[in-house]
Length: 283
Image (cartoon, rainbow, N blue to C red; front, side, top):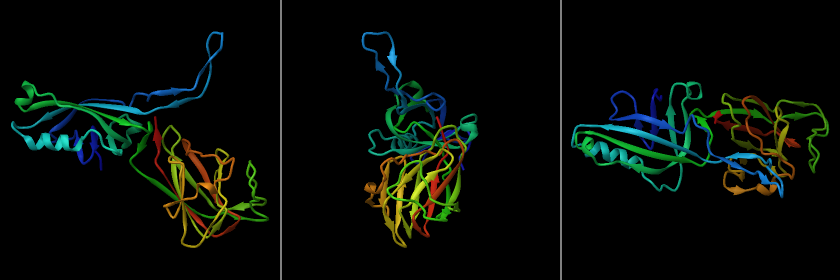
């Protein structure tokens, strides 16, 4: 379990009792990420046409004191080996800080963009300092706890869903079952991954709370799965083969909003099920 005042990355723990790596400053978690605006200039007039603001990435900078008997190549080598600049993929950067996300242990996916370890008098005396900068392309701060909820396919009395689908979605009869509750303890919409298991024909995933629905035209046999990733915007049969073409025009990629979200799986026929995973999210 993570302890307070610690940062973890690539097997390295910064902070905590007995660690040679101690935090002096951490910037980038309480600060708002950069904003990408879509405002447009007004032709021959003052001001702008207001567009939608989107969040860009998040920069995180830590100042670290490295305390070790001199010389201690092992301590410095472990530090630099865990913080290699130029990695091709992002790694979980975990943080446990009182007051951050209500004290929840959180993480972002990040890469090291800068590492500075100046050689100076204090370094030779066994008390060095370093500055490390990470960059997260996804600005959301996530709980380190992955929440997974499951539900069986809804039973629809009557004709069921009619294809081609029109929105708002009509199931053509009374719907029972097929529902789970996804509770986002954070303050910002969270992406999710749903694994739909067959047998099911024309599956639909609906966030009843927000009224948004993803609908698919296709069939899953017993033992087959459809893995739907809302962040990657991918739809994969058995986790490998793309079935994005199954997505019905007018479908909406929803998020798990703060609080309780009622999520339902339905289809025109079958006895399928869904496993729905997400992490609470903050900004």
